[in-house]
Length: 212
Image (cartoon, rainbow, N blue to C red; front, side, top):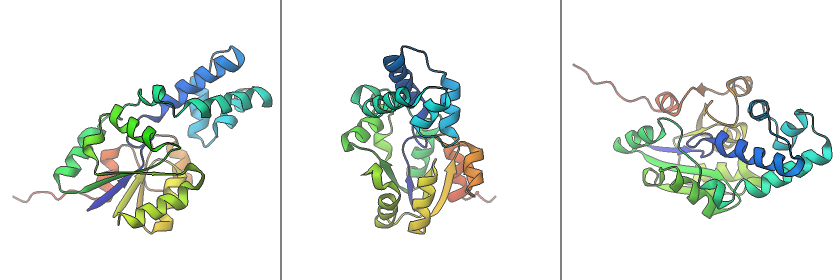
């Protein structure tokens, strides 16, 4: 069996870096502290970084400066080195590999070396067979192409773009609510939603129960 995974928000903690960079960018642009809870709630509800900052009451000029600074910083090596695996991810991937499955990660990043930095920093590099990096500007079509190319039996991700990529590739998709979109957001789009990676794997590929 071949299972493919998104990276940010699916295998590694998306909030840690995205909120941390936003906090730094807002302080740089305005000298003010970020309302981290409201910012992340807006992002989880589908807002862009620009939209989330505007939603906090900042004007267009300040929000543009913050969003641009955020984009400049979010994939720098310094921030990527802080990436950490979500709870239970290493155990779940290890169990999957022990069962003989092929583990592929498909992520949209501007820099391939940045994606490699993330998997190394989070301690999951030894648990994946292949890391595929696609261009963010065409994430849906590129992820769909990658899913077809690696003959994935299932795909697990945390965003609507992951779901649309799986649909285009005709690959079964399960969403996790651990990342960049909330359960309400994913439910509203009709996805099968799991609370954790292990639950998503059980939905996609239930492990056989031993008979007595």
